[in-house]
Length: 156
Image (cartoon, rainbow, N blue to C red; front, side):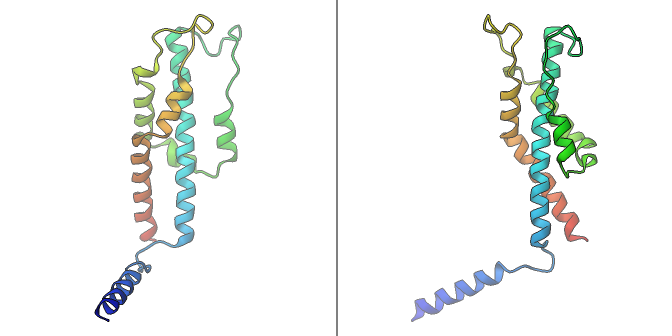
């Protein structure tokens, strides 16, 4: 009987601690925030890829805009910014985001030391961007935005 009372008290106290307080954000705000954070993460992925690609062209001494250079332009940024509901001012003016992308673009381990003969000007841009996307750096960055936005939502 004593164990049953103890268990009941624990369950009741646990359910009370899980209820929303007046300072928590609504479920709708929380879902909207998570959608925004995913869009920020996706934007950062493609931005890292784009900046990395530009750095590769600089490294190999090829003018990316030279019409005699055989190149297929990646339109991901255009399509992402066209269909996304993300407020681009939110990410475009973020110096922390810019520094983070540049940190990953500058990582030397993504500059191939020896390229296969069939691809003398090859790059590791996509794997760099994917590693960045899944990195601890990205998680910390997204979590910092999440915390900031939750504070902002709580003060509304």
